[in-house]
Image (tube, rainbow, N blue to C red; front, side):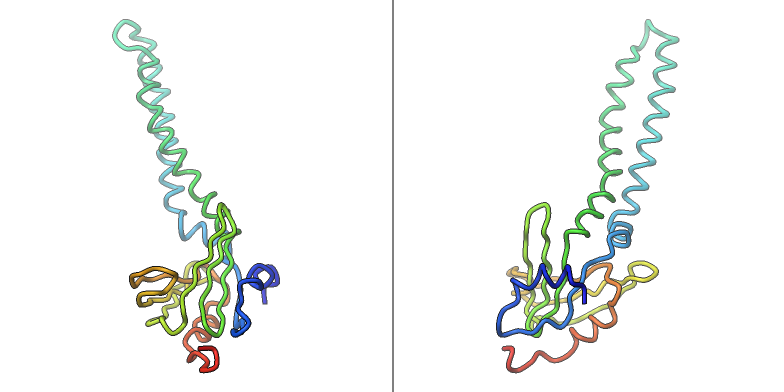
Length: 184
């Protein structure tokens, strides 16, 4: 059992429920699966913009009377900022993964986010309609829960779950077990 996850979840476990599993996402796998492509696109935009800026400024410097190098820089700056924002997304996803804790109890599935601001989302286990395990990376997987209204504190049905966890098959088996009658 992940002791850091256990410590973070211990004050959120009710006296009438048992903790079946707790853990945290693998930060690298989480960032790669959530924002890996975005980071690659961001890097491509940044490189393409820098190349266009250098070429544009060189052309503008040769033809000082027709176009100013400052105009080229001013037109490329928004694209550069957009690319840099996309480039930062994998870092943000990595930090979010390090601040996320998952727990499965006899009554609920819990997602605790400790940063940037603390949030606790729960889904009642008897609201779970379907469980799906999907590989996220070489040694991690996502366990998603389809749930009816009331799950994760929302008024409509949806899908959420535990992402980039190492022991996903165990979590899938535990979540599929019938809810304890005494836990209701």
